[in-house]
Amino acid sequence: MAIDYCMSCGASLETREIGGTDRRACTKCDFVHWGSYSIGVGALVVKDGKVLLVRRAQDPGKGNWTNPGGYIEQMELIGETIVREVLEETGVTARVKGVVAVRDQPRAIHNVYIAFAMEYVDGTPKPDGFEVDEAGFYSLEEMKELKVASFTQWLVDIALNGKLNEALAEDTDPIVPLNGLGLYKVGK
Image 1: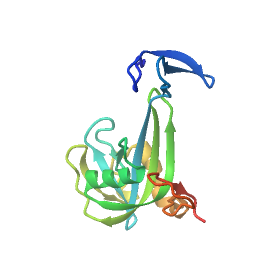
Image 2: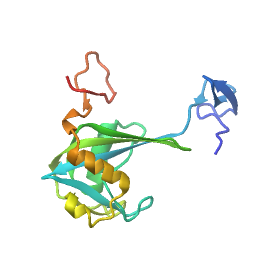
Image 3: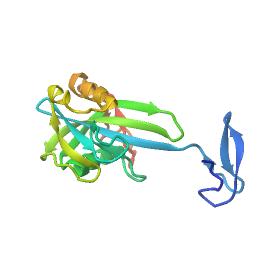
Image 4: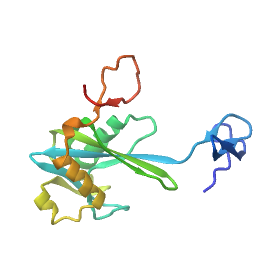
């Protein structure tokens, strides 16, 4: 779908070469449409050697078991998003430990998915009844009986066999004040 009008001032857009790529740009102001993107986040919550999974109640993926997750809101830090999504979908409270995987999926709406190692804090898994119709902690053996999505199988391997202590961790005390940013870095 072509974008025809400026999201800043409402004027017509034209196609211009910017940085070697044809882009839609405003004829009246400095707005440039850089592309369409979505950013998803997923949680890898492990408790007693089992991974928190949910069964999707809606498409895409209805009936598949996946790790909890969702899409970021416009004014929300990704670390806040994943904590919220886990709580909304499962009733489980979890804390971010670090970023452990990224999936890059170029397409009409370029999708980036960021997977977080999460520390279980509290709660018994209970599905939200809207996006999710089942939720629980499952072992690898128990997962053999479930219809686990292939991407989730890859993430579960990271959760159970990866080096989660080598994840990118949140920098809560950067060397300069950078308020309002979610910063993640390798450990010292």
